[in-house]
Each structure stands twice: as C-alpha cells, then as structure tokens.
Image (tube, rainbow, N blue to C red; front, top):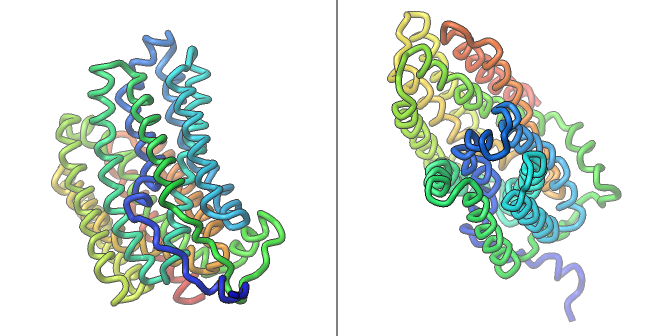
Length: 399
C-alpha cells in the first residue's frame, strides 16, 4: 500500500504542448480577431467609434486584472479546476457576444470573454513550471511563446474575411467553436499538475501567496524585467503606426509587412531561447537578451538623432529589440514563477498583471506625447529598456 509521501513523490504526467499553446493563445487571439469588425459596430448599433472602442478597452482591462485572481486560485484549488472554470466563463461571454442585442451587452460579453480567456495565459505558465525545472521551463515557454505568436498575428486576417463573408458576429461564432474544442481537450487530456511539494508553505488563504511574493526582491527583479522589456514592444505598437502612416506617409499595408518582419525576428529569439536556455542558464539568457534590446533602442536613438527615421531604420532597430526580447522574456517568466514553486500560479498571475499594467501605462504615455516627430516614441522605448535592465540588476544580480 502506497503512503501519502510516495504518492506525492510521483511526478505529474507531462501535458500536451499543443494544448498549452492553445490555452495560452486563446485570450490574445480573441482580442485580435475582432479588430476588423469594430468600425462596423457604429452602423450596427448606431453609436460612435469611441463607444465601439470600449469593446477593446474593457477587454484589455479584464485580461489584465483577472490574472490577479487565477494565480492564487489555481495554487489553492488546483490548475485544472481553475482553468476549466475560466474556459466555461469564456464560452458564456462568447455566446453573449454572438447574441448581443445592444452595444452595452456586447461590451459586457467582451469583459466575460477576457476574464475567462486570460485563465489560459496564467495557468499555462504555472503548469509548465509544475512539471519542469526552471531551465527546462524557460525552453518550453520559449517554444510555446513562439508558436502562440502566430495565432494573434493571423487573427485579424481571419476575422476580416469572416466579417466580409458572414458579418461581424461570425468571428464570435468561430471563437465559440474554438472554445468548445479547447474545453473538451483540456477536460480529456490535461491532468492536474499542482502536486504538494516537500517543505512547501501551507496555503492558509488565497491572498497569502501574493503578500509573500511581493516581499521578495528577486521576484520584483524578474517580473519587472519582463514587464519593461515587454513595455518597449507596447510603446512601439502604440506609436509606430502613427510614425509610419502620418509622419512618413506610408500605407497601412506597408506597416503590416514591416511589422511581420519584426514579429518573425521575435520568434527567432524565442527559438534561440528554446535551444540554449538549458545550456546557458536563465539568468545569463536574460542578461544577454536585455543587453541586445538595449543595443536595439540605442541604434534607434542614433538614427533619430541623425534625422534618419525611415521604415528600414525604425523596424531595423525594433527587430534588434524583438530578438533580445525573444530571449529574455520566456526566461524572465520562467524565473518569476520559480521564485517560490509552491506559489507558481500566484507568481504567474502577478507577473502577467505587471506586464499588462506597465504596457497600458507606456502605451498611454506614447499616445499622449506623440506629436510631430518620432522623438517621444524613441524616448519612451529607451526608458522602458533601461528600466528593464535596472530592475534585473537590482532584483536579481544585486539581490
């Protein structure tokens, strides 16, 4: 007869990588697939674009804030129950969007979609950390990130065709179908991975892990390195369309092509992280990736100071940043959720929330400051990259 100790020592079965990719990409894909349909809402609901845009703004708020809840809940009750509950909530929100009779109902449905869909972002990271050590988790996260980048990039194209052929509700019908298949796959294929660990601290409350992690300098170092390196990207997507289309007088199509190049380079950085993180070590990969990103913003700043802001120089500098981010961000996420393995879910939620919060603040700053030159965009990108390096130095290397 096996004892409780021997049962706890049995490692959890490895989850299918394909399922982790799908649940991690569900929230971002649902965000992007609806973008081509937003202008049409003004005619459908007889409303202004500012009101229609709330379907995007409130989605982002829900996607960020809900991450704070899923992490502690998955630590307390298990990864599988928290994920399945989130996917059910996602389906309820998606069906509400399909049937929405008013713009207010649609906005409410989008919030439910976001709150449910973000469960996969948080819990996929925690699951990976449950079944792999820190170095291996960084490699797996890099491959998952590389694969899930493709879906959000393709989503606006798919959403545009669905809107043209069947109307704006078709995108939500498609995501309902995806949600049903995802829920079924998770129910059948994804087992519980959050097993008790020897020496782990007992969980006396859902928010106990939050205060414990927030008191750790090392966690801040990893989490804010990820947040501010991601912030360079958020600054770019907030300001680059304006610079390209309004200041450089280029087409939206040309912007899309250049952006695809930068995204491909980011995926290349993910591939390097996936192949090298176990051999080199997560901390060294973070240091190398963050240094590469600093070089990228420095190159971009040099081009701006020499009045050489062109599509090639703008996206050339960003591609260097993207390559560095592809190496540093998966390793930073893996390290953040490894600070206290017993609270990997809580760490994943806090890290994800910090990414969204910093990204939202930086995006707003770029939009507020951007006027007749690319200077504010370059300055905010430099600031965010330097902040990422400083947090890593302060929290990890000197902590």
